Length: 357
Image 1 (tube, rainbow, N blue to C red):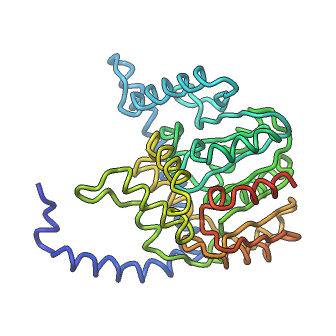
Image 2: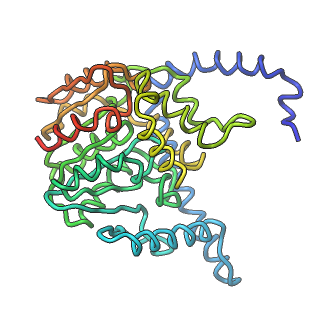
Image 3: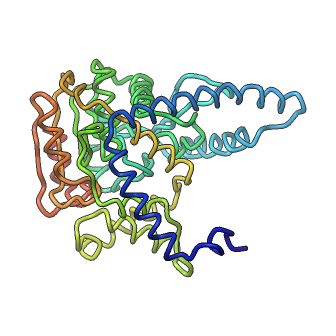
């Protein structure tokens, strides 16, 4: 059945309205007061959700049933146990208990050496990293990867949430992994979480690597909005999910990367398909980013920091890396020519060398 709105308004007119609306939303997205309001609304919604969740679970228990949320959590827990049991050297997280005594986020670790925490970007779970690049890092580090709330095997973690919540999740993961101090590499949204982690829990952070990311609102430099908007799209009629994901993520990289390195892009698509972030997770993560603000706080970031940015990043333009390096005291800035947003894929060897120091 067709959408009643599309029967009344031609698709071309809806596109014009959407584009004009975006012109008004873009200034709001760079307004610190609006970001603070989004953060407050997110926290309020989280409290209200937690308040109503308990009675629903109790009512379901009294009649011998599970709520829809409990059924999703049970399926996710089964998958966590399967992955932990089936892959030597990987461990699932021990985190704070909540209503059903399950961990809020999932994490894995592998390798030998000092701890290195990887924080992935918007819509990507902890399994979405180049496998050869990971193996190289695991020769030097105990690599800890976590699925940010809403993605991977943390899709049923409490939501909505803020960047501060995600930073606290990362701190709990480090403590659960026995990592007293760790290098932390954050890509894109993961770089925002890493900045907040360094501010909120500096005792856990040995060094920060902020990759293809940006400072808090309003200090960011806006990218091409149509690229970010595509993450909310679905495959077109006749387009396979694989082709859609390949086209979407190829647009994040530098021009020509997908043609030069098809195997790396194919691996990325397979990782994304294995546990794709649902639309609600995409939205909740986007709201967390929208509500993140306060660039002046970075002046108090007393952690050794390296900012790494691709010169041709269209999603998060290179000006963001430059601003971060100015806002963080003593930060080192590394700019990579002919590299886009997918730095671990496009310049993995350089990034690994920087992390090794």
